[in-house]
Amino acid sequence: MKALLDTCVIYPTVMRQMLLGTARAGAFTPLWSARIIGEWQRAAIKLGPEGVAQAGAEAALIGAEWPDAEVKWPPSLEARLWLPDPADTHVLAAAIAGSADIIVTLNAKDFPRQILAEEGLSRTDPDALLHGFWQVAPEMIQHVAAGVLADARRLGGADWTMRALLKKARLPRLAKALG
Image 1 (cartoon, one colour):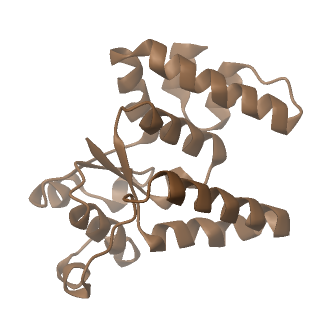
Image 2 (cartoon, one colour; image 1 turned 180 degrees about the vertical axis):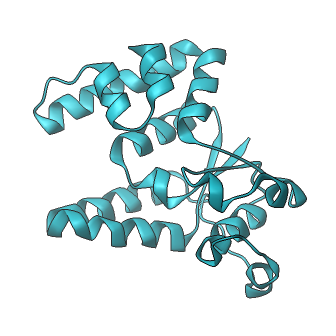
C-alpha cells in the first residue's frame, strides 16, 4: 500500500516517527512531495533556528532513506483538481501522481471522501492507520512505539509513559491499545 503523508502528519515529531517507523517495518510505502516537505520546514520556524536545522537534517535523512518517496506532477494535473481548500490540491495531485492508495491527514474536512473516491483514493488519520496496523501486527507496532518512546525519553529528558506520549502525539486509540 502506498500512503501520501500530508504535512500535518509529518511535522509532529512523534507522529512522524511512528508513521515512518511503521513504513520502515514494511507496512506501507510512504509518499510526499517537495512542497509537503517545504511546508514542514516552514512550520519548524516556530521552533527557532535549532528546530529549523533539525527539521532540515531529518528531511534530508528521510529523503535519503526513501529516495522514491518524493512525487512530482505536471501543472495540468493540479489545475484540474478541486478541493474545499484550494491550498490542499497539491496534496491530492501528489497522491494521484504517486499512485497512492490513501492520503494520511488530520484534515478530514479538506479531503471529502467522494472527491477522493473519484480519483481512486481514500483518506485516513494517522491514529486509525496505526491502530489498524496494530490490530494486524501488534508486535511490529509495539516495537516501533518502543523505539519512539526510547527516543523521546533520551531526547526530551522526561520519563514519558507510552500512553502519555502517544496521547500527546494525537494518537489516542493507539495509546490506549499500547498503554
